[in-house]
Image 1 (cartoon, rainbow, N blue to C red):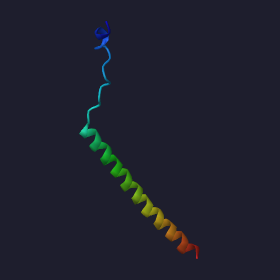
Image 2 (cartoon, rainbow, N blue to C red; image 1 turned 30 degrees about the vertical axis):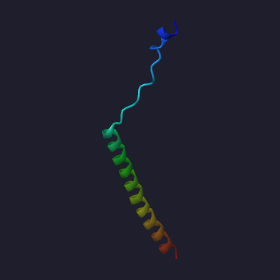
Image 3 (cartoon, rainbow, N blue to C red; image 1 turned 180 degrees about the vertical axis):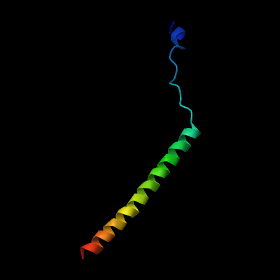
Image 4 (cartoon, rainbow, N blue to C red; image 1 turned 90 degrees about the horizontal axis):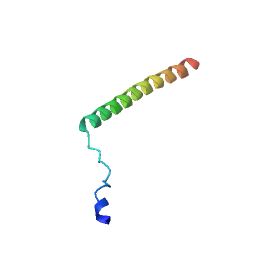
Length: 55
């Protein structure tokens, strides 16, 4: 009787690797980093101008 219930429990379904989704996430992350660095350059420029005019 124990062998009759053996096939009921299946292992959880494995997720397949989605290369397109991974590529989109990587490109999005790189764009966010590029945007942040460009804003940092502008911020640095404003700080430099502020210090220059403050003197």
